[in-house]
Image (cartoon, rainbow, N blue to C red; front, side, top):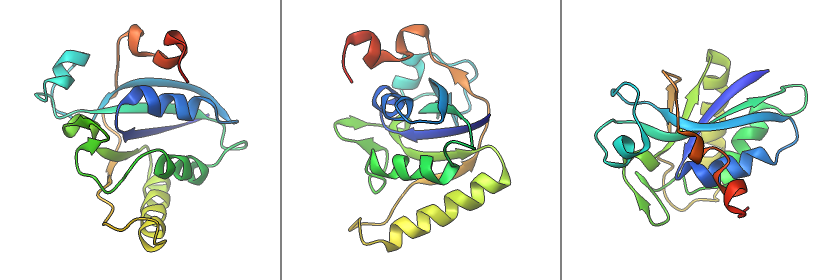
Length: 152
């Protein structure tokens, strides 16, 4: 199993998108990329932590590649809006790829460049590509939120 971590707006919808993919063994939502230890949802929402809402994906690279996960990442949000996805605003909703190793960083950089040159977006992609840092798991009520609430 390998891990991939993505921030693409509100983590509830991002998690729902990745959970349905063949080869994804598990997902969880949490926070990464900030400077405030052990943040809770309200800490992150208040914009005092520097963290992004993220989804951490555990996947079988024999069934789904990291590049395929990136394709889904690009398709489920607008990577050209800084600190915003739809009505959600703030640095916690930024577009970010947290890489767990050098190979992921290389693939992510290549994928970003390919997306930028594709003509799909009329503005520059602002997605950050950063090394993975401490991951803080969000509270249980945020895990598989849409499944619990009956929305998909």
